[in-house]
Length: 550
Image (tube, rainbow, N blue to C red):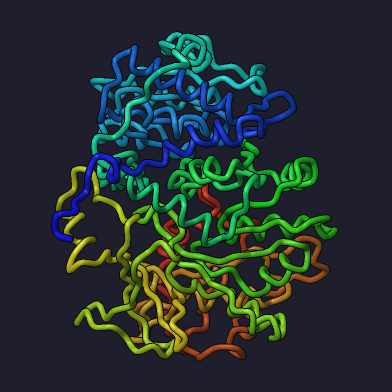
């Protein structure tokens, strides 16, 4: 059979952009996008709008491999641009709307962005950012009907060469969109760091995004015609690839600009939402404001840190079907999930929640994951206790970091991607994250997982949110410092001493927080995560604890 080789007929480049063409044919009359009271599109309309925008980009000089950036919340245009930009041959770069102008400027300079689409509510940020650039990108203003009354400043408007509506109206709906020459061609560059000193631009190819998009549908068992509410920012790792994946199954994108629990509850009810994604803290905030059970189940995929058992129990009692997974920007989405076994349904709810709190096993479209000793590189014992660095390999792993060969070599070596996350493997082969390597607290030579301490704090009936970081200590080097917000309406609030004593009864003494700081609310990133670097700065400013005797 040696004479049988790949040919043009059996090896066209894989790209998720083909999902849109098919959606236009199969789901042409189905709703693709809903936003507010007035914006509703079908998949046929969405396909034509994306073709028009891609055509307009080409007509104004955007060429293959140029970088086109987008600074927007979860608006209809944001959904469309995940297709339209790469359909013009360009590489898509979504920018975090919560960054400051200096950081946005650095990222635009680093990726050499040629054009920047700007949400009208981010116009001031964009104008300030490009003032710092020698070769600023062309600016295109995104205006949605729902925000017309909140228009951009007149002076700011003068900096914009086009509006998004202009590009839609002037574009050719018959445009022959530019397909990748190779499935290894870059399709997106996403930044994982907000630091201005060393931006990490993660580059993914068409093939990787194609595989990730289909894989995430299979693993989460997403059916045809789901109704998906955008609580996860699309600028965060392209919304875990769901803009493309939803086209593959003819789903409805319910767009949402701001995370407001009452509005989310209303949208779930009014549109019959079936699926949502978000960090555990988002699930916590959402269920904390819900009083009545859902009329029909809503599937909620959460990833990142382990959702506390108490949050899982509350969410599922209210009608959320929670799935837990793990992924990074470098792998384009969720590549590890807690695949549920039927026999676990016989366990008590608390045990089910504990099992569901583990990240799980590789998804069906991924190749391999492991946990290795950072020193020797050997696999750690599968005992659920021995910690090591999580490594993985699979089709959706990044090509590398933009303009950073050293960082790429450090992350991609010996045939594996080294994540920098710390985890354990259980006897049944399921992975459980214990911490980011940078968040492990070393006290008196003992490694303390901040995630484990947080899990205990969440079991306290008064605790709403908890995060644990290291605080300098003159005797032990550093000790756990807990930041806690309490549930509203408490008749009596626990004291720091009482919280510490509560922890003493539930964990080894060296793991017990030496300090407990009460905040009205813990800080959040735009993706709903608690930024521990902010809390670490607060802990450092407190100075060293003295004569600690944990």
